[in-house]
Length: 191
Image (cartoon, rainbow, N blue to C red; front, side, top):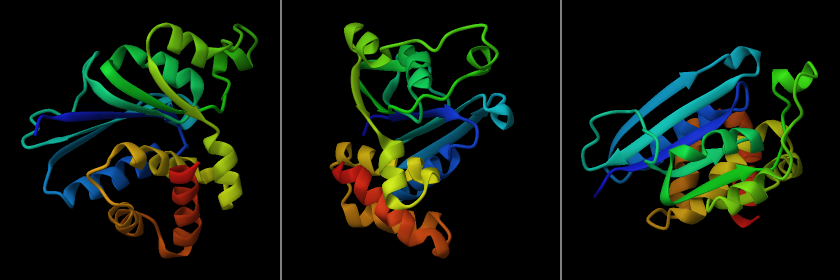
C-alpha cells in the first residue's frame, strides 16, 4: 500500500503523544511499517506540538512535508488553520472547535482569528469540525479530547474495526482511566 500520512497538531499538554501512541499500536495490528515523529515547539508553555504518523508497506522517513498529509487531526482551531498547507489535495482536517488563546492574544498584541472553519472551507479544505471538548466533558474529563478525536477519526479508517481500535486503546492507557477513555472514544466515534 502507498504510504499514508497523519499529522496530529495541538497545544502542549493536550495529549497528542497519547493519540499518536494509540494510532501506532492500531496500525501495527495490520503489519504496517510505521514511523512516528514528535516535534515539540514551546510545548511546556502552551506552544504548538506536532506529531507525524506515517504508515504503509515501507516508510523511509517519519517527516511529512507540505502537501502530503492525508489527515490532520487538530486539537484546536487555530492550530488546524496553521497547518492546512500540509494537507494534500483530497485530504481531510478533523478538528476540535475549541479555541485556546496563543501568547499574542493573551498579551493583547493580536486578536484570535474569527470564522476559521469557514475560511478553511472557502479555501477548499475539507474540514470535519466538532465540539470534541464538550464530548470529552460528557465522558467525564476535559483531558479526554485526544481520545474523542481518535474516536471520530476512526470513522475514516474503515479497514479497522471498532474492536481493534478499543484493543489499541486498552494497550495505550492505564487501567484506572480505561472506562473513561472508552466512553470518550465512543462519544467521538458516534458524535
